Amino acid sequence: MSEYKKVCFMYRHKDYTIDGMRSALGLAVENMYAYGAVLGHEMDTLNEDQQEALEMLRDMEGEIYSTETVNCEKNGVESITIEELGEKLREMTNIIPYGIK
Amino acid sequence: MKILNVYRSAPDDTTKKLVEIVTRDRDSDSVDLSGDSPDYDALVDKIYDADQTICWW
Amino acid sequence: MAKSLGIFVTNPDNWRHVMGITKAAKAKGSKVKVFFTWSGTKCAKLDEFPALCELADDVSICADSYKKMGYEVTDVPAGLTEKEMGTQAQHGAILEDYECYINL
Image 1: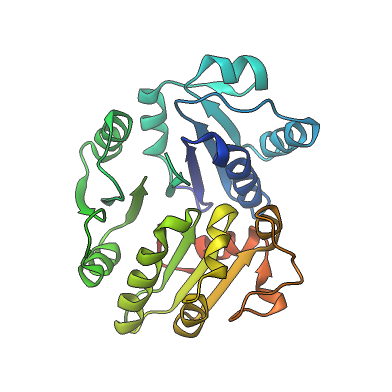
Image 2: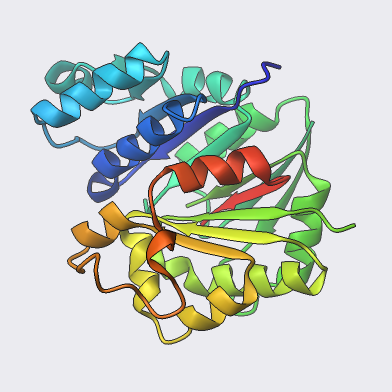
């Protein structure tokens, strides 16, 4: 396993998703591989600052995924199935179900 | 690799599926935190015994 | 020697678990750090919050989240100091420096 932490947040409630993405970015700037997965709900449309934060996360080799096509279409996050996410989680040093469901 | 799954509420299908994949071919244990009087002493022992703790919703 | 434990809190409904786990870990002689973010920062307004600050070795909250929850950042919760009104770097410190981790 890499010497760097690999952390994946998972968001299941709309009110927690955008801020949870900020938490992922916060770890990326601390030299960790940080990912987020939006599960089972439609996110708000990202504003300019939030899109910029997503780009910063990607610049640091992080990513935001979603199981919902609508989020991929409106916010440009990466599509993922639950099975693919599960496999990805196996590579993580820390798995963080964020907020409430 | 030993995984400790902690549940704050009854796991639904999404959680069950993720737990199934994450724990596949790995040692795992679980704790239910949804009751009135969780045994925190036992929980902390299990956290210390695990390589990774995941506290599900 | 008991392991060290970091607790990351995003949901205020988990307050009883934060206290329960911190008490149990401290009783074992562990070093405990707790960081509250997003709506977890509402816990800083609970009557029991100063007791957690006494009990744990290090408690901090995300100042930006606290502000978004409607509080003034200058209104430092009882039990904390201004420097413990932190950033997500505190979460990073938990992941890097503590042997065990739980999110609540």
